[in-house]
Image 1 (cartoon, helix red, strand yellow):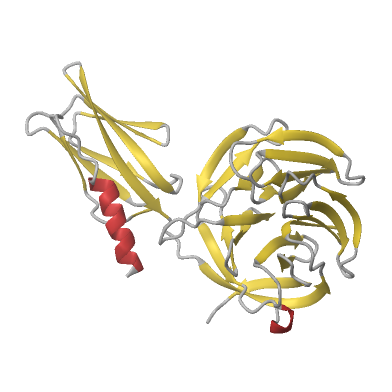
Image 2 (cartoon, rainbow, N blue to C red; image 1 turned 180 degrees about the vertical axis):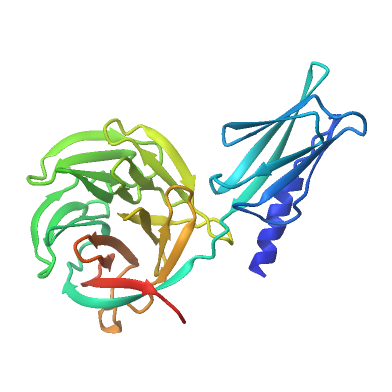
Length: 341
């Protein structure tokens, strides 16, 4: 049923944008969903001679065709998501412009991963966990809520907060990541971020951004940021200038509510807000490579007065992950593996 729904939506995207008064008809070979790697054939016909040339502009890139009424568009290498296709038809020195829309889905069915709990540690149940970062047996953590937000340095095994700085009550602290000796931290709706010295928690700088701030991680080149939508934004750390963004998709559609992020060996792991799910995303194209269902992680005896799963940190020395949730009294060390069931 879900697949039929997405086929229907894609059909509307492909064929629902006819324009009156144009002398060419523009049709497509596809009547269903378009998946990454598919070839899409557009037929540009006037019933007379072929156009002198045709240009397709997709994602800012131009593809040109000459003396033909059939144009084959290769989707391999394109970013996932909704696209506006501008078609420019040139004949006898005149230009006609047509617009079409297309939703490009991932060609991958996400792998199913399972988790195994290796250890469990105390966690401050007063912390509305937003960002989590592991380094040398310690955790950097941001806790949210207006009037309660803080940046913390926490001993992993005991859960003891060894250093903390309160965030001004006008801000709701969100995601955080570490670049060298500098901690970058977001706020939710205030379009304001802060840089801190990781050793002293002294505030070093303030920066701004256009979207809401949710999750944040660093891939070695860019700060990768989520805002609760299906988009991931890639910022230059020095200037916080937006470099590019991608849409996150499975073979069924967009994956929204992307929250806390962690970059691990070429992939972005993301909490899906208000769920027990973590997704593993290829940041080069937005395709979801795997999904992990964390249902049952927090035992029933700890579930009183808690909120949702949130917080992912990775230990590169043993490939273990640390996960927790908002107001959770426990933090868990887990390993992921392929679920063959």
